[in-house]
Length: 402
Length: 142
Ligand SMILES: Cc1ncc(COP(=O)(O)O)c(C=O)c1O
Image (tube, rainbow over all chains, first blue to last red):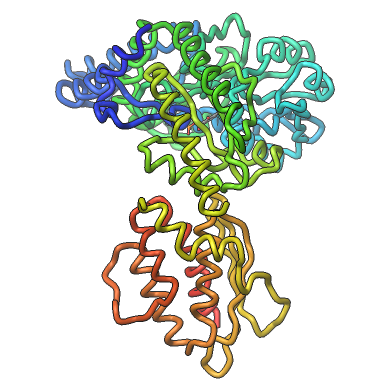
């Protein structure tokens, strides 16, 4: 893959001075996706599943075609794909529907301090309501979830395991396949947060044998406001809807109603039609480039950068061994918000803060971190400019007395 | 010097390294307001003591970036000894200045005027205003 060529597909990068290193928060969008959104709005911007006229038929076909693309993207069955607002909504759906209806006070839910708030808080809520116990996998000294530590908390009371596939702060890949296997042996189900995995890594839900898997469109070149929940058919069939309204019902009477089959019983209201169609175009784009190639490229840039950063005094890297394109770091003695303003001055977009993952930031015992994340449109020149900027930032802050 | 350098070289580093009036008091005469910016982690508590219409004391404590912490320190020095009404006016003027709104340029902001430079860094306006907002809160809770 050629990042120089790919870059040209991204209109935001037509500003050649801009260095975009915040893909973990949201990726940029290529023309191919933007055009697809325009096409929907210009040619068939009508509702789905309702009209019996031709345009509505076309919109429905396009929307459902995207569902097919998503299902193939992760090797799921068509009906196992629920469109949501994003990974957060998908993760909440699992907790609110499966969690609130299947757990009680003798049960245990395993999470970790490495989770994004959208994975841990819904289960905290389930735990508060059902009195099921929330159990944290102890992280190893690098901050990783390991099989050895996972086994320490897994037991016959475990009913739900809710963990990330790739951490948005540390960029570690969790040994999720083995976690799933072990969890199934004790009869627990596993909900995988794949928000940082799906954009970078081939996922096969049948091979993983995961019960639920969630991700967002906007982190993988797609539009905002669209996300995906995969769930195993037999689980979804037995779960109640958590939102009620138009389009999700079958027969409506005065005091009861029945629901459509999955996935539709979970998709009430007018869905994010344009978003879903745009996500289909993003998947085409990623398929064309190849996720394996993308992952290799990001990792190469990350290794290159880490090696250079190591040579700079006063730079603390928190995740040197990460297998993906994410680097979390700080300049010793400089608050990340002070630092990020310097980088902004060099037109480098990156994140400073707790990255919606306060538990791992507390675990690291720092107020916040700086984070960069690479994607297919980043080049070695981006790395060099970033590294130069880190040096200058360090020198600047030391010179004014930090 | 670039904008950033100007910002930091002036009072900010001095107050960041040597904060004045820092540390809270356990005294019922003081009004206390705590403000947290959850997106960036700035977390400031401000206390004010008003007697006979005069700002007798301003204290604060908290954690945050240099702009946040130094602005609390500068604020305390600027406001202590002012009439309550004048302090209120200064705080209002300061916040208007930061947020690029029209403000009364005849109001003397003293050292706090250097934070005008923060205008050029819109993402940092919150950092520079959080302590002042908390101070305004203490006056309202009077
Ligand atoms: C690991 C992880 N999980 C979940 C989410 C939530 O995604 P969204 O904000 O798109 O719902 C994010 C995004 O920040 C993430 O990085």
